[in-house]
Image (cartoon, rainbow, N blue to C red; front, side):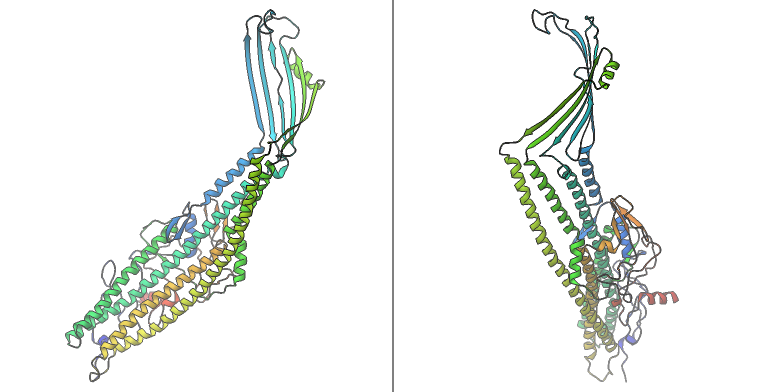
Length: 623
């Protein structure tokens, strides 16, 4: 007579372990054969309504919901550079341009003077010491990019003089004088390259800040991708543990019944209970990891820590092998990496500083020219008319020369500027070589991570087969006349298969997440991940910004557009259309809340015996 299998002999009712409570979870009845039980709804870490979110929308939210840049480095931290820094640096250019702004100076002084007798010419010579004077001057001057300084003004030696006790034909007296003056440096401070150098330095520093800000934004985009895929891996592990907990609970129930039937001893029951508790502890760890990863993603994209929903990644990770040409990777990085471009701009600043230092070593030699017309009358209007006739003109031409003897201060600064330029050139050359080595390491990591995922996926397939066969053996023991310890051996094999399968699913999920993270890091190392997402620096001109294709989001100094087709045809790592690509949505997914959750898991989580999310949803709807 054939003995009934333990699964066939006992009821299928069982309880599901949950972190927050133990309740009926809707686990389907354990079917006969080799299929594994599947939850009727996809796994979540909480019972909150699910909010599926696309990676594209997560990046859009990260840039639009925060005035600062948040990056993932161990934990979430605030980057020191934001879009505000570009705007701050642009003000320095305006300040340097102010050097060439016209200046207006004006002055007015009125005096009433009453000195003691004989004080004007000295003792013994008496004269009228009571007088009234007015001094008026006005001038407009400007420094030009050639170093030339021009000024034109009204500057009489004494605009008004009145002697109350004197009667004469020229009392009061009004004088008028117009002065045009030009001063041109011939050595130090002469010509455009020298005078425009401070402006060029300020503009170059603005470009440096833009590159630095772009690098910070690239880190933010990579951080969102990294947190997104790590959250995806955390849910995969959570689902893997949850799927096998009912199996472990079933073995505990069966072994207890076997012990009641005196077919096993208490140590056999303790063995399966220990495994169940270990799985429950692992579930707690997976639950905590999922919460931690969700909090990281929420912080990166600027969401509240709690909003009554649970974030679920809606995009499938890339599962296609890498196709990386190292020479192309290096060429793109040398052209597009923000830190390299920033250092190259630093060399331009050093060259301008060297030009200024060399100019300060020269003597000061200036050419001066002045032209003056004058008028004098007892009325102000007549003095202006007299000056307007240009009958009374003065010309002045001259040179001025000045030089510090030995000039050691300027010469030492010139030598220091030259050495700083040579140092920065050497550092840039060494840094470029370091970038090549860093890229080689990242490319190697891409290939290695892919091979690790392939190995983990093979282990996953094999452990799934092992688990199916082990379950069949445990569920269908031999006839009663055969060896009595056969069922115990089958139990041990079944437990080993459960543990191995959980480890394989977890490792495959982590390996695939790490593979996508390394791909994002490779794009960041090349400096192209902003181009991938069509994020552009807003230069303020407006005409150079491409029109948004789906939705427009911005942060200080930035305008960005996100496209559903995230990888171009000539991308280094194209997304396979079979294994999963980012879905294009006509409406942003940032505010979509669904209940129950609709979750898309990586392809490797759907092993034989596990139903996919879509199949589960259909079966749930049919019920």
